[in-house]
Length: 206
Image (cartoon, rainbow, N blue to C red; front, side, top):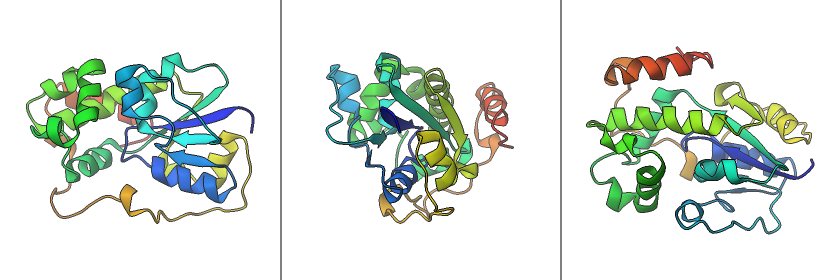
């Protein structure tokens, strides 16, 4: 592989899985180890250290400022699954400023319309839409998580692996269960629902 690789997404979208797959293939990849919310908020320049790659949803707001030799891969996951996972973790509620302080500050700075929505489901939906649209503008490649294998990911990064499957083992990236029921498109209010579905359908999500 040439240069550095940055894998981005919305969070709850498989960035932890990607970091694990790349490390197993011999690519030293951090998971939110290089790019953090504080870089977006303070303008501080992140240090790559000895990382070859980083897998971090937190890098999305600074993507336009990255130097040209960074290979940016956007991993997209079905919006309803991302929304449910974030809601399971307590995000996008009225308590977000205290529970997710830096994330909330980043949203207020770059995507203020997210928290202007009245319902948590609509906030999560608008976040998925705006975050992915923003990331896509700077992405060198876009891959739906549901179609991603370690072999394909390594091809996009510029390395090789003989591994075809990988089960996530890091509990920190697993979806929680039990507090939020299954979500459907009708849980998102119009006209946001139409915009969300239209973008999602570009990647085969029904």
